[in-house]
Structures are given as structure tokens and as C-alpha cells.
Amino acid sequence: MDPTLAPSRQARRAMAVIWPAFLMAGVLEVLVFSVVDPVELRWFGSAQVELSAQAVYTLAFVVFWVVIALAASLSLLLMQMPDQEGAPQTHAPGWPR
Image 1 (cartoon, rainbow, N blue to C red):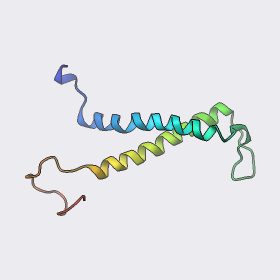
Image 2: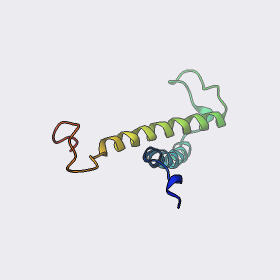
Image 3: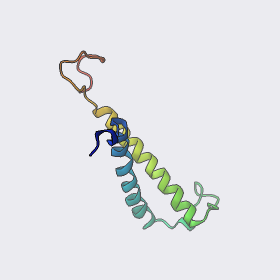
Image 4: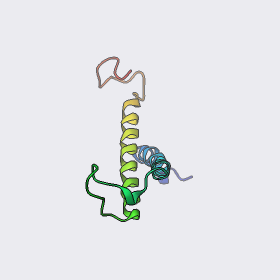
């Protein structure tokens, strides 16, 4: 493989977050809508949601995807360790543990 075509470090991190989040959003979508009928949804128990079933599925998938991606991004951020042990620390000693 040509090294100039290799994805950057940020692109690899983004792929490591976005792709699993996409897959898990699909799984969560199936689990939620196997129990919930989108036609019978109501806004906080009062007015009925005036969206088609397909629109509810789409909006729910996007919300699930964003929430899971944010959680994975936060985990990735908290798991980052310094690349080299001998490099000068840019953070307080002992951070992160």
C-alpha cells in the first residue's frame, strides 16, 4: 500500500468512532422499534407525533448514532495516553490514570 494514500491519524480515529456507532445505532433501532410502534408515539403523553413512520425511524437512527458517537468519542479522548514515555509532559503528573 502506498504510504501517501494511508489515512491520517485523525481519519483513523474518526473511523474508529463513526463506524461502530453506525452499527450499534442500527442494532438499537431494531431493538427499540421491535417494542415501540412509531405510529402510536406521543409528545410527552399529549399530542400525537405528526410524522410518518419512516421519518420517525430516520430521526431516531440519527439521534442514536450521534449519542453513541459522542460516547465513543469521549471514551477515545479519555483513553489517549502520551505517545512516548520519555517525552516532556504537557499535562499534570499522573494524568490520565
